Image 1 (cartoon, rainbow, N blue to C red):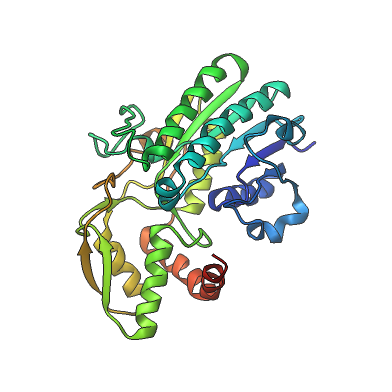
Image 2: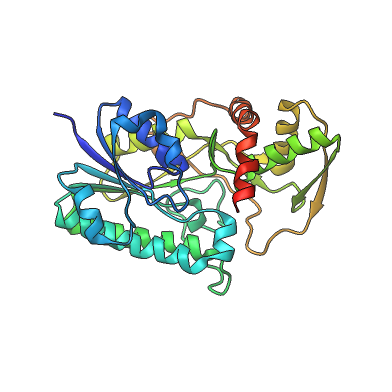
Amino acid sequence: MKRICVVTGGCGFIGAYLVRKLIQLNWQVRVVDNCIRGEKSRLADVSNDINFFNCDIRDTSSLQLAFKSADVVFHLAAINGTENFYNQPELVLDVGIRGMLAVIDACRINNVPDLVVASSAEVYQTANIIPTDETVALTLPDSLNPRYSYGGSKIVSELIAFNYGKQYFRKVQVFRPHNVYGPNMGWKHVIPQFITRALACKAQNKTEFSIQGSGNETRSFAYVDDVIDGIIKMYEHGKHRNIYHIGNDQEVSIKNLVSMIAKTLNIELEIISNNIALGSVFRRCPDIKKIKNIGYKPQINLQQGIKLTCNWYMQNKNQNMLQNELL
């Protein structure tokens, strides 16, 4: 008999990749998403292999049918995206916190034994130790800055998960993904924005390419297939009431990221620096030794991943044009 799992936010970027992987592993997969941000088209090729539940993650009663007899819930539903942090902080908080409480309640009502919760590197904001391991203190630098609506909601979600999980679950785990990227991740994150803007420069025969900050800021980007492998390894081999970083520990500066994208697209770009948004992080890199100890090892380096991602966005650039017309 197949094991049953639920993926909340299963039409999102990471969620859709996780759904496919779980199907490959012969799970019976249920997807919970109201597609406010997720896109059901991401699962079009596996629509016959899933049970889809269109419901609000904040509504416990609507979650109960989806959670019935489930062995594990992977809770990924959230309002992500920096633009949303600044423009819709109340929605980010509402979905993040009330959604977490509703998931906990629906799990308890249905006696779901295992819960896996997606957190974020945003819980650290500006970490004082880099590479950053799972024991570094979580921070909320300024409650007046709406950017921290997302990181704040994730800090609260971790508290809810672990404190309820102490009594009501067989296994509760939290993973903190760090700068995940790959094909079909949407159009409002840094890598797809850089790719589409670079393509526009190429089409218009322009070279000037503006960025926020000096370009010396760093991130450690993790290809989505590697991150999904990490989630599965954590669930299968990780411990109860534990946190795991999932990402890549190879740092790259933003200006080198632009250069890598430009080289992949066969274009020369001149980087123009601008002021950086208040609350942005200068450097971010996870320490991933803990998850490496249970078998995780990134397989796709940044150059390979950028090539795969650029290819997808070149093939689907008209989709971005259509989306902008609808906004």
